[in-house]
Image (tube, rainbow, N blue to C red; front, side, top):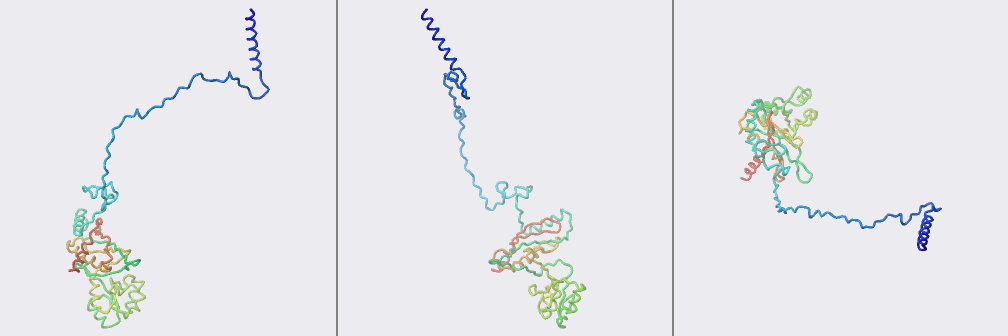
Length: 321
């Protein structure tokens, strides 16, 4: 019995201590009892890392292919999209450079285009020459005007030439050689009043001071010694300008008529050769090719690039021989 009473007293004392500890304290922060803190009686399970490398299927190693190096010299852009030349006659023209034809082949194509399109056979034929006007350092070739004798003229009428001179003997020579208009100060006034309209105007050196009022009127047709329209030999000047063919350089380019499409091919080629050779005489050959690009076309056909160096090489061979 004594032992039982002792056990009851001990349990009662323990309960009393617990109740005392559970009373609210004066401080604002609540007290956390040790037996209220949650804790684990076991260790956390270890996360297993997935071994992806082992799960991946081992792929067979591919053999490295040797890169084929393509030589793109003399190839047009875009590289990799087109071949060096079209395979057939159906292709995108913007991906390929325009073909450059021999001049004889280009003339044959123009004639075939005319038959296919049913266009006039006597339509004019033109050439377009792009010039390299550069000289040493910053110098350039001055724009020029030249008159040549074509071996096969294509105009039905001769050019009208007006001669300015006050010398009676020179005036007589001019009339004998087929001048359309001859005179001095009176002819100047007639030109200013639009009574006289000629294709070419030539003059003797003595009357040049009296022709100054015509500068703005005639402009490019005004007589100049560089063009060969000022001189003493009136007969020679009339022979040149009556049947001569004139071309002008504008913006480093020459656009001139060389015949009609119904002319034989050899005659057109001869006229082109004459003009190309005359153009090349206006710059020394030591500076390289004078003609950068040459185009031939007719009034109704497309333009075609031609090889102008064919005629230049012939000239060089003739000079060396």
